[in-house]
Length: 157
Image (cartoon, rainbow, N blue to C red; front, side, top):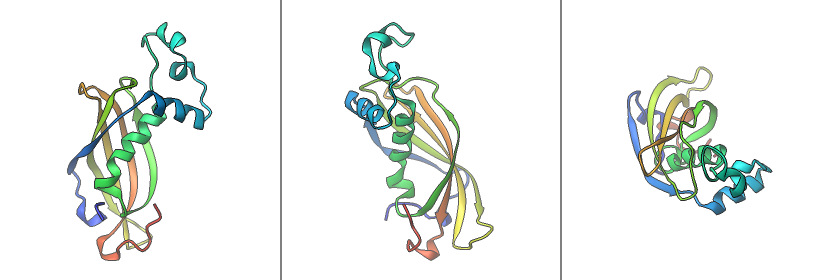
């Protein structure tokens, strides 16, 4: 199990995740169809060509999902109980079809659970960049992790 347990995380730790993900036109089109998002900035090349971006941009919720997904294998796989919140979500630059997303994560807060002794709460800050090193997404996420001594029997997702 590659995920980290609460006991293994310390404030100040950073992880540069090894996976990168290139976002395709199909990814963006399918995501918008699945979520019933008809925003022309994501789907209409003619419309988008006349905007400040000059072309279609990737849906920000898709970007956020990929950013979190990139972190799973090395950080939370099999060791979390739940994501509790997403805060301070910023998209300083747009993502375009063909951009590759890379992520690094910092542990910014940590505390024991007040009600259950087999888990703890950790606040993570994810910083995502494209292949040009432009920051394309920042988010703080609060996660409930299992403690190592309790294994993965209570893991939901």
